[in-house]
Image (cartoon, rainbow, N blue to C red; front, side, top):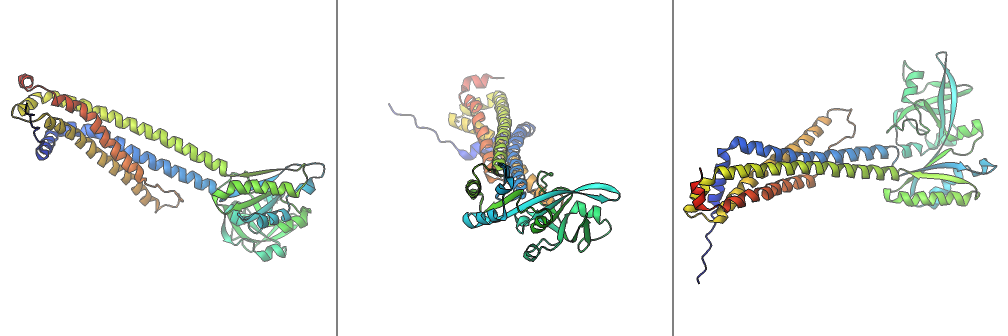
Length: 410
């Protein structure tokens, strides 16, 4: 028995017929396409917003201090002064732990002064030379302490921008004399935190920075209430945190307890939360695509029913089953593919336009909307696949129609 040869599928003709069918129902095709446009644009925008949010949160946390490890004494015996963290401890950290690049210490002292006849509490903070680098302080006017200021115990200070406006509302505070009770300082600069810590650190809204050696002279305290060390890379932070704790315990009595912390836990939590939110939002966008796919399937099923007689005529004049199948699949893929292209274009254009506008505003700071090309490819592939999967069922139904019954259909 001779096998019946398979008739070839003419792709030019199939493409032309599919395009002609979509043109004949432009409104229906456009409305069906709208769901795919929204779904694919949502995937790109969701990933873009999630990446921007993640970068912003992490940059804010790292703005407090990059690769930061900090700590203080939390428990001791009957002689707490012996167990305090001293300049010698900081020197030992920098010399014995290779991954440490900067060290700093602070000793803060609340002080009440009279301002316009009212008592005001300020925070007098003794700091070491590398404190600005570790805490990312922004010098607004003047300069920070140099090595000579530290070594010669110069009676100089820096003010927070807020305190400078209160104390010297009419002019530049740099070079002015500042009296705090019996203490006299020359103001050499004003500063602010790069990222506000909301008064959860020694830097408050009304803080005055002075060289640490002056605190030692004024209150007789040769130790730090808080110390900071900066690791060379983010990967070094956990190891540095462990080594700093071990070094402090080795240099002090067994009963002394030190709290050595880092921002790694907060950073990891921020990354995990961002990843979870991104996944959740992508799932929601995928649900939107599935709904649009169901819409494509419903429209194609209606189209098959309406074009039953056309299908019967094509089969009667010799159109193979595969040609009918490919034509309806191609129609569904053209709807989803065009929708995916337009959706991705919208999803890329919105953050690109937002980045353009952010160049002209100082309020935005370092906020950027990164465009993830992985999300672009994902949105396009998933959208096209949606049309292919949901378009196959009605296409297969059309291909299986019997020509005689199709010609009878009214």
